[in-house]
Image 1 (cartoon, rainbow, N blue to C red):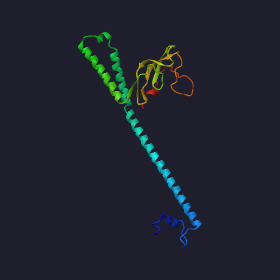
Image 2: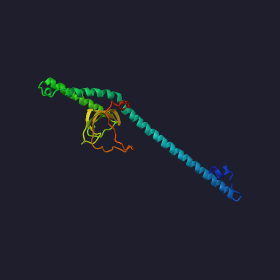
Image 3: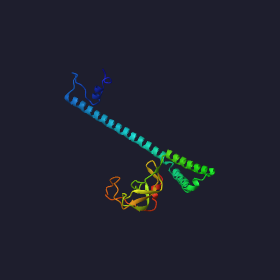
Image 4: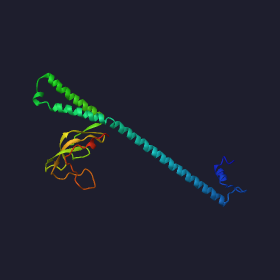
Length: 220
């Protein structure tokens, strides 16, 4: 059997360790062989660690790319959806402006017009929802400055402080990001509302009325 058939002998020869005439290794040669084996094992372990790290990094890149693609797909229509919210608002205002006695009018043409506007409004809201745009209905919930814009305060000692008591204009979100904050009125003077989370400040959130938050409606 030559050295090519026996990798241990080949390694021994590479490190200068050869058996004597009796075919046995000396103590120094055996120590050299063990040291070479330990060094080889260390190199194998280092390569294994590098391989695992590379695989983990590649997996992280793949997942991050998937998230970025999903986000881009969800938020690419943000500007268009925000413009369509204005159209939806106009349809709602048109329906709200119709007097109740006019709705009871027996004029078939007027009734058909009202029905057409209602169907158009319903269809638009359905289209927005299919594309991930969700209407915010915060009445009765605690005021959240990330999704609500306080327009005024309503004194009410029986209602927990900073509770949304009235929605002036509906808000919308796309995914977990605000598309348009809900314009709301909040309660004032009642007991402190239960904290939504630990902010670390121990202070009550303020919901002072103010101008619309431009940062809340920036593009995703």
